[in-house]
Length: 432
Image (cartoon, rainbow, N blue to C red; front, side):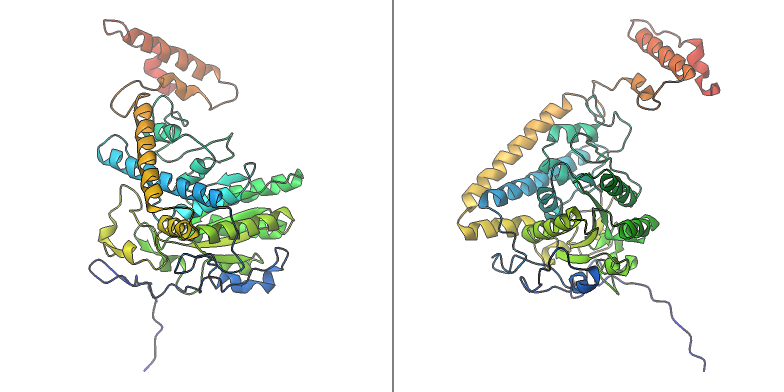
């Protein structure tokens, strides 16, 4: 009898109603992975893409050669940034459920990725984030009011109502526009880094995508260009185990780590405990130093877990065990850093509780200010004529006429009696 080949279809280790199973996650002991010199050739450090860099052990002590030896004050700042991010996320989620915001995406469980990396990079470095990197803005000092206003699409919306919620940008803060199209930011970051090198600047680029996005062509285009031209760029894959409802195995995570894709291109790949603030910070410092010394790109895989839904449009209880987050073997990044500080004698449960109350009050005050600039259902509202701005360097004559006609209509509507729209506005669609 002729034997036929069989198609392999990845299967999640646990479905709703099953006991969570993370036996597939390969975890190295804390402190067990060596830290090579930043000038080491990619071919000599391939083991970093298979092992897992960890600093905090099970007793929350910092051990091993990757310990960045940060000052307690810096650790406290990192804890505050992560805690503020979580309070911000929780508030925005509640506001979406109340109909005040149309859409939102939380980063619960992944805060150490953005905060650890954001603090390890320099203010002049250009960031190309994904839609779950809101903590990058917090690290760089963007007001929560500005982020909230963007989600509300109100009169202070940085995107002027032209983007869906959470698609922030911040030119002066060196954070590129977020795109809902997956993986576009990877080749953009590489191109920016190449330009910085051509201009002789001591700046690098960093970008983030989820593990599911590694199946996009842009991921491979970015790695090819980064490797060929040795661009000063850090390419981050946030492996949070789920791409919406699709288990990470569908993106190829069953057979190889995502970090192992780096050596195939001649790029160092590093797999790191994404819930270990110290490890994330240390690995990012290593990659940044390598890039600044003309050592080229680094691919970092952050092994973490998406504790919340993919977005407010998602119900994770339909595709994974409801309490799976509680069983994640790498724990909660906030609690781990908190316990580390307590162990150092630089923190306490009382100080942590006080900080939580302080941050909750801060988030509430920011929300109160944000809604004063308008909501989905209450004014004030954006000027509709602003749709003609930021499109052309020189506004074409036909669009200038349409803008003036719209303004005339708006002035007419402000009067006590309804006014007929100008004749020209009724036929704007006919113009080129």
